[in-house]
Image (cartoon, rainbow, N blue to C red; front, top):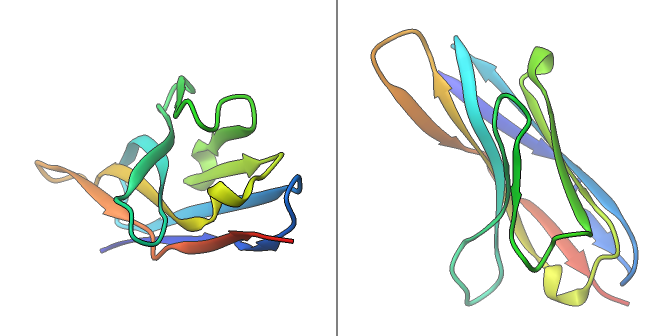
Length: 120
């Protein structure tokens, strides 16, 4: 079994910052890509940022220059530093990881979600 546990969500004023963390645990042989997605009320889940095991990153245009994704491979953890937050960043943020547990398959796992609310 593999679990992704997120932390760091909350309420912040426009222009503020938050840092999300997501730690993977359980039957893990290796982790490939990790990423963050978000889903606002009434909208579909969308990509925020991804990072490969080697550290290559990809960002949605809406967060470029404001958000930074990083990971600590030794801790099986991915982070999302969010700066200059806007009300439109309000959403539930989900982490995602592609994990190989030593059997034949690489599986995608999701965290439970972390609420981020940007409001004055």
